[in-house]
Length: 55
Image (cartoon, rainbow, N blue to C red; front, side):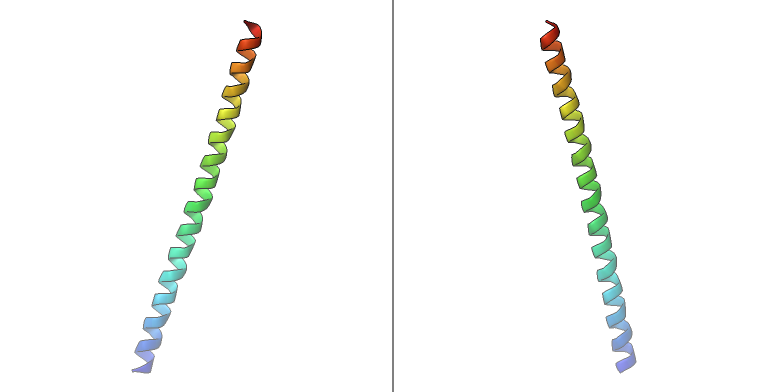
């Protein structure tokens, strides 16, 4: 009986670990996307500023 419970507990913990890893990966991906977006925005802004100075 105890053996079954221990196995069940281990499986539960493994599942929790997996979930946590997935969450972290998603968070990292989100951060990278935000960074890319910010880079694009600054690039666009500098382009517009350059265009204004030319006109």
